[in-house]
Image 1 (cartoon, one colour):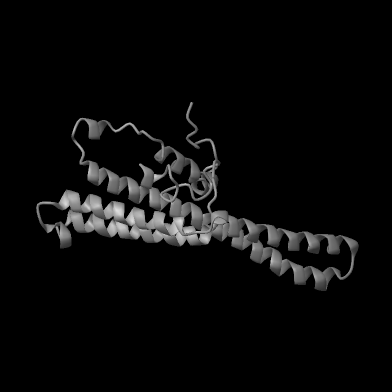
Image 2 (cartoon, helix red, strand yellow):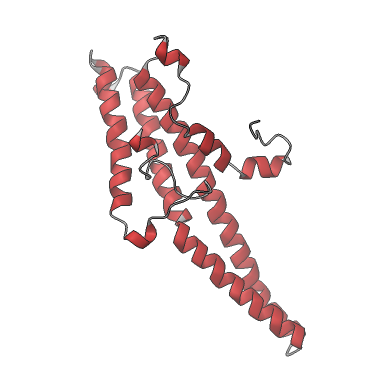
Length: 195
């Protein structure tokens, strides 16, 4: 039985795009329309890549904003508690806990690179959409007879550039995200770039 997330509250279904990315990234996918020749494989790849980048961008943005919101809230609470509660034992414990929480959340952000990934995947999504719209309009490099070949080359070039940027990261920044919550996508060996 597949978990569709329909049993979750609406907020959590929207927040949890990791499952959508996992389903989208299943390989080999069931490509009936490609097998029977009713869909252009290049256009399919463009649409698939745009969808993947959109979901990955949303997920990274939500995690980044969520972590930063909690950090800012905890940081704002520290001087407030110091001023209100003074040196009471419970306030010192709470203030120390909030400080620890801020450090932990920043560590998670630095490890997972949600902010950087959101920017990278947002740029990739927009570049892919630009190519797709030029292709649909028969404009720019897509005005000739080799439009499918050119689109395929440019899609792979965009994704390849992302892989190159990811490969340039120091080894400690390349994480294996078995839980589907991190950057396992076009920057991973098994993601769209490896597809």
